Image (cartoon, rainbow, N blue to C red; front, side, top):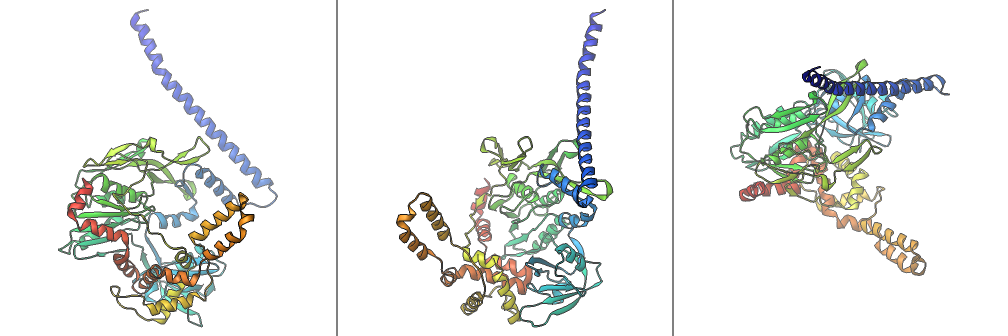
Length: 550
Protein backbone atom coordinates (compact mmCIF):
# COMPACT_ATOMS: atom_id res chain seq x y z
CA UNK A 1 0.00 0.00 0.00
CA UNK A 2 1.43 3.35 -1.02
CA UNK A 3 1.95 6.19 1.40
CA UNK A 4 -0.28 8.33 -0.83
CA UNK A 5 -3.14 5.81 -0.63
CA UNK A 6 -2.82 5.68 3.17
CA UNK A 7 -2.94 9.48 3.49
CA UNK A 8 -5.85 9.63 1.04
CA UNK A 9 -7.90 7.16 3.13
CA UNK A 10 -7.16 9.16 6.31
CA UNK A 11 -8.22 12.38 4.58
CA UNK A 12 -11.47 10.79 3.42
CA UNK A 13 -12.14 9.53 6.94
CA UNK A 14 -11.46 12.99 8.41
CA UNK A 15 -13.79 14.56 5.86
CA UNK A 16 -16.49 12.03 6.75
CA UNK A 17 -16.35 12.68 10.52
CA UNK A 18 -17.97 16.16 10.46
CA UNK A 19 -20.59 14.94 7.98
CA UNK A 20 -21.38 11.92 10.14
CA UNK A 21 -21.50 14.09 13.28
CA UNK A 22 -23.87 16.56 11.62
CA UNK A 23 -26.09 13.71 10.41
CA UNK A 24 -26.25 12.18 13.88
CA UNK A 25 -26.91 15.63 15.40
CA UNK A 26 -29.71 16.28 12.92
CA UNK A 27 -31.29 12.87 13.62
CA UNK A 28 -31.08 13.49 17.39
CA UNK A 29 -32.73 16.92 17.02
CA UNK A 30 -35.44 15.50 14.78
CA UNK A 31 -36.10 12.66 17.23
CA UNK A 32 -36.38 15.08 20.20
CA UNK A 33 -38.76 17.35 18.31
CA UNK A 34 -40.93 14.38 17.25
CA UNK A 35 -40.89 13.00 20.78
CA UNK A 36 -42.01 16.28 22.39
CA UNK A 37 -44.74 16.79 19.78
CA UNK A 38 -46.04 13.27 20.43
CA UNK A 39 -46.16 13.96 24.17
CA UNK A 40 -47.98 17.25 23.57
CA UNK A 41 -50.52 15.53 21.30
CA UNK A 42 -51.07 12.79 23.87
CA UNK A 43 -51.75 15.33 26.64
CA UNK A 44 -54.09 17.27 24.38
CA UNK A 45 -56.06 14.09 23.45
CA UNK A 46 -56.38 12.99 27.07
CA UNK A 47 -57.74 16.40 28.14
CA UNK A 48 -60.12 16.57 25.19
CA UNK A 49 -61.52 13.05 25.74
CA UNK A 50 -61.56 12.61 29.49
CA UNK A 51 -61.60 16.00 31.24
CA UNK A 52 -64.76 16.34 33.35
CA UNK A 53 -66.02 19.48 31.53
CA UNK A 54 -66.07 20.42 27.87
CA UNK A 55 -63.03 22.31 26.63
CA UNK A 56 -62.63 24.50 23.54
CA UNK A 57 -59.91 22.94 21.38
CA UNK A 58 -58.92 26.15 19.58
CA UNK A 59 -58.61 28.20 22.78
CA UNK A 60 -56.78 25.42 24.60
CA UNK A 61 -54.23 25.06 21.82
CA UNK A 62 -53.66 28.80 21.54
CA UNK A 63 -53.04 29.05 25.29
CA UNK A 64 -50.47 26.27 24.95
CA UNK A 65 -48.74 27.93 22.01
CA UNK A 66 -48.77 31.34 23.70
CA UNK A 67 -47.24 29.81 26.83
CA UNK A 68 -44.47 28.23 24.79
CA UNK A 69 -43.66 31.41 22.85
CA UNK A 70 -43.72 33.52 26.01
CA UNK A 71 -40.56 31.73 27.15
CA UNK A 72 -38.67 32.99 24.07
CA UNK A 73 -39.20 36.76 24.08
CA UNK A 74 -42.15 39.20 24.22
CA UNK A 75 -42.13 39.76 20.46
CA UNK A 76 -42.64 36.22 19.13
CA UNK A 77 -46.41 35.69 18.86
CA UNK A 78 -48.97 33.34 17.30
CA UNK A 79 -52.07 34.62 15.44
CA UNK A 80 -54.91 32.24 14.48
CA UNK A 81 -56.88 33.04 11.34
CA UNK A 82 -59.52 34.91 13.38
CA UNK A 83 -56.93 37.46 14.58
CA UNK A 84 -55.07 38.08 11.33
CA UNK A 85 -57.05 41.20 10.39
CA UNK A 86 -56.48 42.75 13.81
CA UNK A 87 -52.77 41.98 13.50
CA UNK A 88 -52.61 43.59 10.08
CA UNK A 89 -54.33 46.73 11.38
CA UNK A 90 -52.02 47.09 14.38
CA UNK A 91 -48.68 46.10 12.86
CA UNK A 92 -48.79 46.63 9.10
CA UNK A 93 -51.61 48.69 7.58
CA UNK A 94 -53.03 52.06 8.62
CA UNK A 95 -56.22 51.89 6.52
CA UNK A 96 -59.70 50.61 7.31
CA UNK A 97 -63.34 51.40 6.65
CA UNK A 98 -64.91 53.22 9.59
CA UNK A 99 -65.87 56.56 11.12
CA UNK A 100 -62.49 57.91 12.30
CA UNK A 101 -62.71 57.89 16.09
CA UNK A 102 -60.95 56.02 18.89
CA UNK A 103 -62.46 54.93 22.20
CA UNK A 104 -61.64 53.31 25.52
CA UNK A 105 -63.55 51.35 28.12
CA UNK A 106 -64.19 53.07 31.45
CA UNK A 107 -66.16 50.86 33.83
CA UNK A 108 -69.21 49.72 31.89
CA UNK A 109 -68.96 52.63 29.44
CA UNK A 110 -67.27 53.02 26.07
CA UNK A 111 -65.95 56.59 25.85
CA UNK A 112 -65.00 58.38 22.64
CA UNK A 113 -61.44 59.47 23.30
CA UNK A 114 -60.18 61.01 20.08
CA UNK A 115 -61.88 62.20 16.90
CA UNK A 116 -59.81 62.50 13.71
CA UNK A 117 -60.18 65.82 11.95
CA UNK A 118 -61.81 65.68 8.52
CA UNK A 119 -63.21 62.17 8.92
CA UNK A 120 -66.89 61.06 9.20
CA UNK A 121 -67.15 61.14 13.02
CA UNK A 122 -65.85 64.72 13.25
CA UNK A 123 -67.99 65.87 10.31
CA UNK A 124 -71.03 64.39 12.09
CA UNK A 125 -70.10 66.28 15.31
CA UNK A 126 -69.17 63.23 17.35
CA UNK A 127 -67.08 64.59 20.22
CA UNK A 128 -64.40 63.33 22.58
CA UNK A 129 -66.14 62.55 25.86
CA UNK A 130 -69.33 61.20 24.25
CA UNK A 131 -70.44 57.83 25.65
CA UNK A 132 -71.28 55.19 23.04
CA UNK A 133 -74.53 53.45 24.03
CA UNK A 134 -75.72 51.69 20.86
CA UNK A 135 -74.69 50.69 17.34
CA UNK A 136 -77.36 50.16 14.68
CA UNK A 137 -80.00 50.10 17.41
CA UNK A 138 -78.27 47.41 19.45
CA UNK A 139 -77.22 48.30 23.01
CA UNK A 140 -73.50 47.77 23.44
CA UNK A 141 -73.53 47.15 27.19
CA UNK A 142 -71.86 43.82 27.92
CA UNK A 143 -70.15 43.58 24.53
CA UNK A 144 -66.38 43.36 24.26
CA UNK A 145 -64.41 46.23 22.67
CA UNK A 146 -63.54 44.01 19.68
CA UNK A 147 -67.23 43.18 19.12
CA UNK A 148 -68.13 46.87 19.21
CA UNK A 149 -65.23 47.69 16.90
CA UNK A 150 -66.43 45.11 14.37
CA UNK A 151 -69.94 46.63 14.45
CA UNK A 152 -68.67 50.16 13.77
CA UNK A 153 -66.16 49.29 11.08
CA UNK A 154 -67.37 48.40 7.62
CA UNK A 155 -67.12 49.11 3.94
CA UNK A 156 -66.61 52.75 3.02
CA UNK A 157 -69.84 54.33 1.76
CA UNK A 158 -72.13 52.29 4.01
CA UNK A 159 -74.06 53.84 6.90
CA UNK A 160 -73.77 53.03 10.60
CA UNK A 161 -76.09 54.46 13.27
CA UNK A 162 -74.52 55.25 16.64
CA UNK A 163 -76.31 56.23 19.83
CA UNK A 164 -74.45 58.63 22.10
CA UNK A 165 -74.87 60.09 25.56
CA UNK A 166 -73.38 63.58 25.84
CA UNK A 167 -72.55 65.65 28.88
CA UNK A 168 -75.33 68.17 29.53
CA UNK A 169 -77.85 66.48 27.19
CA UNK A 170 -80.86 64.87 28.87
CA UNK A 171 -81.68 62.61 25.91
CA UNK A 172 -79.46 60.26 23.87
CA UNK A 173 -78.21 61.52 20.52
CA UNK A 174 -78.43 59.29 17.44
CA UNK A 175 -76.26 59.95 14.42
CA UNK A 176 -76.26 58.26 11.03
CA UNK A 177 -72.68 58.29 9.81
CA UNK A 178 -71.47 57.29 6.37
CA UNK A 179 -68.32 55.25 6.82
CA UNK A 180 -65.22 56.43 5.03
CA UNK A 181 -61.81 55.04 4.10
CA UNK A 182 -59.88 55.83 7.26
CA UNK A 183 -56.15 56.33 6.92
CA UNK A 184 -54.57 56.62 10.34
CA UNK A 185 -51.47 58.59 9.48
CA UNK A 186 -47.98 57.67 10.55
CA UNK A 187 -47.38 61.43 10.53
CA UNK A 188 -50.30 62.89 12.51
CA UNK A 189 -48.92 66.43 12.23
CA UNK A 190 -46.21 68.52 10.62
CA UNK A 191 -45.73 72.26 10.34
CA UNK A 192 -43.46 75.21 11.03
CA UNK A 193 -42.61 76.02 14.65
CA UNK A 194 -41.20 79.37 13.58
CA UNK A 195 -39.84 80.96 10.41
CA UNK A 196 -36.79 78.68 10.21
CA UNK A 197 -37.61 75.46 12.10
CA UNK A 198 -39.94 72.77 10.82
CA UNK A 199 -41.54 69.98 12.84
CA UNK A 200 -42.55 66.42 11.94
CA UNK A 201 -44.25 64.11 14.43
CA UNK A 202 -43.90 60.43 13.51
CA UNK A 203 -46.12 58.06 15.52
CA UNK A 204 -45.23 54.71 13.93
CA UNK A 205 -43.35 53.02 11.09
CA UNK A 206 -46.20 51.24 9.30
CA UNK A 207 -47.06 51.15 5.60
CA UNK A 208 -46.52 54.47 3.79
CA UNK A 209 -44.39 55.89 6.62
CA UNK A 210 -41.57 56.81 4.22
CA UNK A 211 -43.85 58.54 1.71
CA UNK A 212 -45.65 60.48 4.49
CA UNK A 213 -42.37 61.77 5.93
CA UNK A 214 -41.07 62.58 2.44
CA UNK A 215 -44.24 64.49 1.51
CA UNK A 216 -44.15 66.40 4.81
CA UNK A 217 -40.50 67.28 4.30
CA UNK A 218 -41.05 68.44 0.71
CA UNK A 219 -43.94 70.61 1.86
CA UNK A 220 -41.86 72.15 4.67
CA UNK A 221 -39.05 72.88 2.21
CA UNK A 222 -41.39 75.24 0.37
CA UNK A 223 -40.72 77.64 3.25
CA UNK A 224 -37.66 79.52 1.99
CA UNK A 225 -36.40 80.24 5.49
CA UNK A 226 -36.32 76.57 6.55
CA UNK A 227 -32.90 75.70 8.00
CA UNK A 228 -33.72 73.12 10.68
CA UNK A 229 -36.07 70.29 11.58
CA UNK A 230 -37.40 68.90 14.86
CA UNK A 231 -38.10 65.21 14.20
CA UNK A 232 -40.26 63.87 17.03
CA UNK A 233 -40.05 60.10 17.69
CA UNK A 234 -41.24 60.18 21.29
CA UNK A 235 -43.69 57.39 22.07
CA UNK A 236 -43.01 55.75 18.69
CA UNK A 237 -42.82 51.98 19.30
CA UNK A 238 -41.49 51.19 15.84
CA UNK A 239 -42.83 49.09 12.98
CA UNK A 240 -41.34 48.14 9.62
CA UNK A 241 -37.55 48.21 9.32
CA UNK A 242 -37.65 48.89 5.57
CA UNK A 243 -39.71 52.05 6.12
CA UNK A 244 -37.09 53.33 8.57
CA UNK A 245 -34.27 52.66 6.11
CA UNK A 246 -36.03 54.46 3.28
CA UNK A 247 -36.87 57.38 5.51
CA UNK A 248 -33.25 57.73 6.65
CA UNK A 249 -32.22 58.02 3.02
CA UNK A 250 -34.07 61.34 2.87
CA UNK A 251 -31.31 62.80 5.04
CA UNK A 252 -28.10 60.79 4.44
CA UNK A 253 -26.03 60.54 1.28
CA UNK A 254 -26.27 57.72 -1.24
CA UNK A 255 -24.05 54.73 -0.50
CA UNK A 256 -24.02 55.21 3.28
CA UNK A 257 -24.28 51.97 5.31
CA UNK A 258 -27.39 52.19 7.49
CA UNK A 259 -28.35 48.85 9.03
CA UNK A 260 -26.94 45.33 9.17
CA UNK A 261 -29.28 42.48 10.07
CA UNK A 262 -27.83 39.20 11.39
CA UNK A 263 -29.75 36.01 12.17
CA UNK A 264 -29.32 32.24 12.36
CA UNK A 265 -30.02 31.53 8.69
CA UNK A 266 -28.65 33.11 5.54
CA UNK A 267 -32.12 34.39 4.66
CA UNK A 268 -32.23 36.33 7.92
CA UNK A 269 -29.08 38.30 7.08
CA UNK A 270 -29.29 41.55 5.23
CA UNK A 271 -27.43 44.81 4.70
CA UNK A 272 -29.26 48.08 4.05
CA UNK A 273 -27.53 50.92 2.25
CA UNK A 274 -28.83 54.36 1.24
CA UNK A 275 -29.68 53.89 -2.42
CA UNK A 276 -30.67 57.35 -3.64
CA UNK A 277 -29.53 60.94 -3.26
CA UNK A 278 -31.14 62.61 -0.21
CA UNK A 279 -33.59 65.49 -0.53
CA UNK A 280 -32.44 67.16 2.71
CA UNK A 281 -28.68 66.51 2.96
CA UNK A 282 -27.82 69.73 4.80
CA UNK A 283 -30.87 70.37 6.96
CA UNK A 284 -29.97 70.59 10.66
CA UNK A 285 -31.94 67.97 12.58
CA UNK A 286 -32.87 67.47 16.24
CA UNK A 287 -34.34 64.01 16.88
CA UNK A 288 -36.54 63.73 19.99
CA UNK A 289 -36.72 60.38 21.81
CA UNK A 290 -37.96 58.99 25.12
CA UNK A 291 -38.19 55.65 26.95
CA UNK A 292 -41.02 54.53 24.62
CA UNK A 293 -39.06 55.14 21.40
CA UNK A 294 -38.30 51.60 20.28
CA UNK A 295 -37.22 49.36 17.41
CA UNK A 296 -37.47 51.25 14.11
CA UNK A 297 -37.38 54.51 16.10
CA UNK A 298 -34.05 53.41 17.54
CA UNK A 299 -32.77 52.45 14.10
CA UNK A 300 -33.59 55.98 12.98
CA UNK A 301 -32.27 57.83 16.03
CA UNK A 302 -29.24 55.52 16.30
CA UNK A 303 -28.21 56.19 12.72
CA UNK A 304 -28.72 59.95 13.00
CA UNK A 305 -26.30 59.68 15.93
CA UNK A 306 -23.84 57.20 14.39
CA UNK A 307 -23.57 59.23 11.20
CA UNK A 308 -23.41 62.52 13.14
CA UNK A 309 -26.32 63.63 11.01
CA UNK A 310 -28.39 65.12 13.83
CA UNK A 311 -28.52 65.81 17.56
CA UNK A 312 -30.51 63.38 19.73
CA UNK A 313 -32.47 65.06 22.56
CA UNK A 314 -34.62 63.60 25.34
CA UNK A 315 -34.32 60.43 27.42
CA UNK A 316 -32.74 57.01 26.82
CA UNK A 317 -34.75 54.95 24.34
CA UNK A 318 -36.39 51.57 25.03
CA UNK A 319 -33.58 49.28 23.86
CA UNK A 320 -35.07 46.82 21.33
CA UNK A 321 -32.53 45.58 18.81
CA UNK A 322 -34.48 42.57 17.53
CA UNK A 323 -36.08 42.03 14.12
CA UNK A 324 -39.36 40.16 13.67
CA UNK A 325 -40.65 38.47 10.53
CA UNK A 326 -44.17 37.26 9.79
CA UNK A 327 -44.23 33.55 8.93
CA UNK A 328 -47.28 31.86 7.33
CA UNK A 329 -48.61 28.71 9.01
CA UNK A 330 -51.20 26.11 8.04
CA UNK A 331 -54.93 26.93 8.09
CA UNK A 332 -54.23 30.64 7.41
CA UNK A 333 -52.60 31.18 10.81
CA UNK A 334 -49.45 33.24 11.16
CA UNK A 335 -46.70 33.88 13.65
CA UNK A 336 -44.45 36.85 14.24
CA UNK A 337 -41.00 35.42 14.93
CA UNK A 338 -37.78 37.07 16.08
CA UNK A 339 -35.31 36.12 13.35
CA UNK A 340 -32.38 38.51 13.74
CA UNK A 341 -30.68 41.37 15.54
CA UNK A 342 -30.02 44.66 13.81
CA UNK A 343 -26.87 46.78 14.01
CA UNK A 344 -26.76 50.51 13.27
CA UNK A 345 -24.16 52.24 11.10
CA UNK A 346 -21.40 52.15 13.75
CA UNK A 347 -21.89 48.38 14.21
CA UNK A 348 -23.64 48.52 17.61
CA UNK A 349 -26.81 46.68 18.64
CA UNK A 350 -29.07 48.69 20.96
CA UNK A 351 -30.72 45.62 22.56
CA UNK A 352 -30.66 46.11 26.35
CA UNK A 353 -32.28 42.86 27.51
CA UNK A 354 -30.86 39.34 27.52
CA UNK A 355 -33.40 36.49 27.29
CA UNK A 356 -31.53 33.61 28.92
CA UNK A 357 -33.40 30.42 28.00
CA UNK A 358 -30.89 28.22 29.87
CA UNK A 359 -31.62 29.82 33.25
CA UNK A 360 -35.36 29.65 33.68
CA UNK A 361 -35.92 32.18 30.87
CA UNK A 362 -34.54 34.94 33.08
CA UNK A 363 -34.57 38.45 31.62
CA UNK A 364 -31.59 40.59 32.57
CA UNK A 365 -30.12 43.90 31.47
CA UNK A 366 -26.84 43.83 29.55
CA UNK A 367 -24.21 44.48 32.25
CA UNK A 368 -21.75 47.35 31.84
CA UNK A 369 -18.89 44.84 31.65
CA UNK A 370 -20.29 43.39 28.40
CA UNK A 371 -20.97 46.72 26.68
CA UNK A 372 -18.61 47.55 23.84
CA UNK A 373 -17.61 50.98 22.58
CA UNK A 374 -18.16 52.02 18.97
CA UNK A 375 -17.34 55.20 17.10
CA UNK A 376 -19.61 57.54 15.20
CA UNK A 377 -18.55 58.95 11.85
CA UNK A 378 -16.88 61.93 13.59
CA UNK A 379 -15.25 59.71 16.22
CA UNK A 380 -17.66 60.17 19.12
CA UNK A 381 -18.02 57.15 21.43
CA UNK A 382 -21.30 55.25 21.63
CA UNK A 383 -22.06 51.92 23.29
CA UNK A 384 -24.00 48.81 22.40
CA UNK A 385 -26.37 47.08 24.82
CA UNK A 386 -27.58 50.41 26.23
CA UNK A 387 -30.33 51.58 23.85
CA UNK A 388 -29.84 55.03 22.26
CA UNK A 389 -28.58 57.52 24.81
CA UNK A 390 -29.36 61.13 23.81
CA UNK A 391 -26.66 63.69 23.08
CA UNK A 392 -28.65 66.12 25.23
CA UNK A 393 -30.34 64.35 28.13
CA UNK A 394 -33.39 66.04 29.67
CA UNK A 395 -34.94 64.74 32.87
CA UNK A 396 -38.71 64.55 32.62
CA UNK A 397 -40.43 67.05 34.91
CA UNK A 398 -42.16 65.51 37.91
CA UNK A 399 -45.94 65.70 37.82
CA UNK A 400 -47.60 66.25 41.19
CA UNK A 401 -49.70 63.44 42.64
CA UNK A 402 -52.86 65.56 42.64
CA UNK A 403 -52.44 66.22 38.91
CA UNK A 404 -51.83 62.52 38.25
CA UNK A 405 -55.03 61.73 40.14
CA UNK A 406 -57.04 64.34 38.22
CA UNK A 407 -55.79 62.81 34.97
CA UNK A 408 -56.04 59.17 36.05
CA UNK A 409 -59.61 59.58 37.29
CA UNK A 410 -60.57 61.35 34.03
CA UNK A 411 -61.63 64.48 35.94
CA UNK A 412 -59.76 66.81 33.58
CA UNK A 413 -61.08 64.81 30.60
CA UNK A 414 -64.69 65.02 31.86
CA UNK A 415 -64.37 68.71 32.71
CA UNK A 416 -63.22 69.34 29.13
CA UNK A 417 -66.43 67.64 27.93
CA UNK A 418 -68.45 69.97 30.19
CA UNK A 419 -66.52 73.03 28.97
CA UNK A 420 -66.96 72.03 25.30
CA UNK A 421 -70.70 71.69 25.80
CA UNK A 422 -70.91 75.16 27.34
CA UNK A 423 -68.59 76.97 24.89
CA UNK A 424 -69.11 76.68 21.14
CA UNK A 425 -65.67 78.09 20.40
CA UNK A 426 -62.47 79.32 22.01
CA UNK A 427 -59.80 81.82 20.97
CA UNK A 428 -57.15 80.81 18.47
CA UNK A 429 -54.47 78.39 19.66
CA UNK A 430 -51.86 81.16 19.74
CA UNK A 431 -53.77 83.32 22.26
CA UNK A 432 -56.10 80.90 24.10
CA UNK A 433 -55.67 80.87 27.87
CA UNK A 434 -57.56 79.13 30.64
CA UNK A 435 -58.32 82.12 32.86
CA UNK A 436 -58.42 82.41 36.65
CA UNK A 437 -62.23 82.57 36.45
CA UNK A 438 -62.16 79.35 34.40
CA UNK A 439 -59.94 77.69 37.00
CA UNK A 440 -62.36 78.71 39.75
CA UNK A 441 -65.10 76.94 37.79
CA UNK A 442 -62.84 73.90 37.55
CA UNK A 443 -62.28 73.94 41.32
CA UNK A 444 -66.04 73.98 41.88
CA UNK A 445 -66.40 71.05 39.50
CA UNK A 446 -63.62 69.09 41.21
CA UNK A 447 -65.35 69.52 44.58
CA UNK A 448 -68.27 67.46 43.23
CA UNK A 449 -66.01 64.61 42.10
CA UNK A 450 -64.52 61.72 44.05
CA UNK A 451 -60.80 61.19 43.76
CA UNK A 452 -57.91 60.37 46.06
CA UNK A 453 -54.15 60.47 46.09
CA UNK A 454 -51.25 60.54 48.50
CA UNK A 455 -48.33 62.91 48.38
CA UNK A 456 -44.70 61.84 48.36
CA UNK A 457 -44.42 63.33 51.84
CA UNK A 458 -47.29 61.13 53.07
CA UNK A 459 -45.76 58.06 51.47
CA UNK A 460 -42.42 58.80 53.16
CA UNK A 461 -44.13 59.37 56.51
CA UNK A 462 -45.88 55.99 56.21
CA UNK A 463 -42.50 54.31 55.73
CA UNK A 464 -41.23 56.16 58.81
CA UNK A 465 -44.20 55.07 60.92
CA UNK A 466 -43.93 51.46 59.72
CA UNK A 467 -40.23 51.46 60.62
CA UNK A 468 -41.00 52.89 64.07
CA UNK A 469 -43.55 50.14 64.70
CA UNK A 470 -41.20 47.45 63.44
CA UNK A 471 -38.31 48.68 65.59
CA UNK A 472 -40.60 49.21 68.64
CA UNK A 473 -40.17 53.00 68.86
CA UNK A 474 -43.80 53.79 68.04
CA UNK A 475 -45.39 52.86 71.41
CA UNK A 476 -43.38 55.42 73.38
CA UNK A 477 -43.65 58.14 70.70
CA UNK A 478 -47.13 57.49 69.26
CA UNK A 479 -48.65 60.87 70.14
CA UNK A 480 -45.83 62.86 68.51
CA UNK A 481 -45.73 60.58 65.46
CA UNK A 482 -49.52 60.69 64.96
CA UNK A 483 -49.54 64.47 65.40
CA UNK A 484 -46.88 64.81 62.71
CA UNK A 485 -48.90 62.54 60.44
CA UNK A 486 -51.99 64.75 60.77
CA UNK A 487 -49.97 67.88 60.03
CA UNK A 488 -48.54 66.28 56.91
CA UNK A 489 -51.92 65.13 55.54
CA UNK A 490 -52.62 66.85 52.27
CA UNK A 491 -55.38 69.39 51.72
CA UNK A 492 -57.02 68.99 48.29
CA UNK A 493 -58.11 72.63 48.08
CA UNK A 494 -54.65 73.84 49.05
CA UNK A 495 -52.98 71.46 46.57
CA UNK A 496 -55.25 72.68 43.76
CA UNK A 497 -53.99 76.20 44.40
CA UNK A 498 -50.38 75.07 44.92
CA UNK A 499 -50.22 73.21 41.59
CA UNK A 500 -52.56 75.55 39.74
CA UNK A 501 -50.11 76.36 36.93
CA UNK A 502 -49.34 72.70 36.26
CA UNK A 503 -53.01 71.66 36.30
CA UNK A 504 -53.97 74.57 34.03
CA UNK A 505 -51.48 73.45 31.39
CA UNK A 506 -53.06 69.97 31.23
CA UNK A 507 -56.55 71.49 30.99
CA UNK A 508 -55.48 73.88 28.24
CA UNK A 509 -53.90 71.08 26.21
CA UNK A 510 -57.07 68.97 26.53
CA UNK A 511 -59.27 71.89 25.49
CA UNK A 512 -57.30 73.00 22.42
CA UNK A 513 -57.37 69.34 21.30
CA UNK A 514 -61.19 69.31 21.65
CA UNK A 515 -61.58 72.38 19.43
CA UNK A 516 -58.57 72.18 17.09
CA UNK A 517 -57.83 68.42 17.14
CA UNK A 518 -54.26 67.29 16.32
CA UNK A 519 -53.29 70.73 15.07
CA UNK A 520 -54.28 72.24 18.41
CA UNK A 521 -52.38 69.67 20.45
CA UNK A 522 -49.09 70.09 18.62
CA UNK A 523 -49.20 73.87 18.29
CA UNK A 524 -49.83 74.04 22.02
CA UNK A 525 -46.75 71.85 22.56
CA UNK A 526 -44.60 74.28 20.58
CA UNK A 527 -45.09 76.84 23.36
CA UNK A 528 -45.00 74.58 26.41
CA UNK A 529 -42.96 71.41 25.72
CA UNK A 530 -39.54 71.59 27.41
CA UNK A 531 -37.93 69.09 25.02
CA UNK A 532 -39.03 71.11 21.99
CA UNK A 533 -37.72 74.26 23.68
CA UNK A 534 -34.33 72.57 24.15
CA UNK A 535 -34.33 71.49 20.49
CA UNK A 536 -34.97 75.09 19.42
CA UNK A 537 -32.08 76.25 21.61
CA UNK A 538 -29.67 73.74 20.03
CA UNK A 539 -30.85 74.31 16.45
CA UNK A 540 -30.73 78.07 16.90
CA UNK A 541 -27.06 78.05 17.90
CA UNK A 542 -24.78 76.79 15.12
CA UNK A 543 -21.67 76.58 17.26
CA UNK A 544 -23.52 74.57 19.93
CA UNK A 545 -25.06 72.25 17.31
CA UNK A 546 -21.71 71.60 15.64
CA UNK A 547 -19.84 71.17 18.92
CA UNK A 548 -22.24 68.40 20.01
CA UNK A 549 -21.64 66.48 16.80
CA UNK A 550 -17.85 66.84 17.01
